[in-house]
Length: 282
Image (tube, rainbow, N blue to C red; front, side):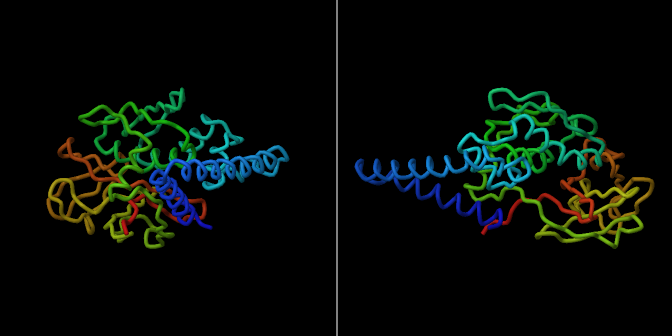
C-alpha cells in the first residue's frame, strides 16, 4: 500500500465515522463501541511489537505506521526530535536559497520556528514555509497543534496552522506533494532549463552544482524567463530586462520589492530532483 492509497483509506474511515452521527442512539453507541474495541485490540498488538523491538525508529519513519503509532501514543521518537528531523530534511533547500530555519521550541503541541537569511522578511517565505517546512512537519509530527514562524513577511500575523492544508483540501484545493522531476542531465554543465512538471511551467537553474527551481514567470512583466541570460548568479528576463538573484530566493536587483516565485526543491544523493507542488484535484 503506497502513501496515497493509505490517505484514501484514512479518508474513507473518516467519512464512515461521520455517517455514524446519522444513526439512532442505540445503533450509534454499538458502532462506536465496536470501533473502540478494534482500536484497543490493534493498539495492544502494536504495543507488544514496540516492546519486542519489532518497531524501531526506521520503521516508525513510514508515514502510515507513524500515524498508527501516534493514535495509540506509542511512537518511539519524541515529538521535538521528529520536528527537528523534518526541518533537517528541508534545510538543504532553504540553504540553497541563502536561508535557514531554526527550531525555537515545541510546547503543548505548538512548534515555534524562526526563518533566517534571505527567508527572513522575504515575501516568498510564507509559500516556502507552507509548501516545504509545514508539509515536512505535518508528515513527521501530525500530532502537533500548529506552527508559528517568525520572519515570515505577511500583512497578517505570521501564523500557519497544520490543519490549514487539510481544510484547503476539503474545500477543493490540493495540498502540497513532492513530485519527482528526474536527474536533469541537460543541466550537467550548469545553466537553465524550462520544464513542465505536473502542469506547472518551471524554470530550473543550476549554479555551482546547486539546483534551484522557480515558476517560469517574471515578477516584473509576467513573461516566461526561459531563454533569459544567466550571468554570475543573475537571471535576466528576456522580455523586460529585470535581473534576479537566483541564490537569494529570486530577489529582483532592479526593484527590491519584486521576487520570483521559488518552488521547494530537494536533490537526493543519487542526483534525482523532486519539487513540492500543490496536489492535483480530481
